[in-house]
Image (cartoon, rainbow, N blue to C red; front, side):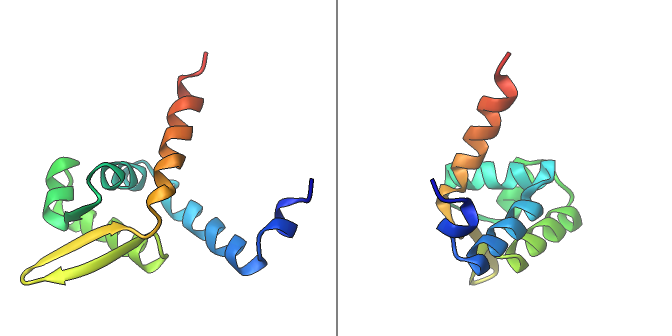
Length: 102
């Protein structure tokens, strides 16, 4: 079997590494988790669901958007965010499985 760098283009692999670095935080993992269940949410909905202060929620969401983890869409006064790659849910599932093994 070929090594990972032979199966995935270098620029795509680097992008994936950067996205993994960004979500490697409990709050940001929770954001990925909640968006994987709800598909699209407003910033306020995420803030309330995760019981975050507005400034903290905005800081995490902005970073995730800047690094390519999230997509955003402004509708009227609301900003909606969603996962750029919905399959990121598999990362959460993998973490749950690994953390719950005995």
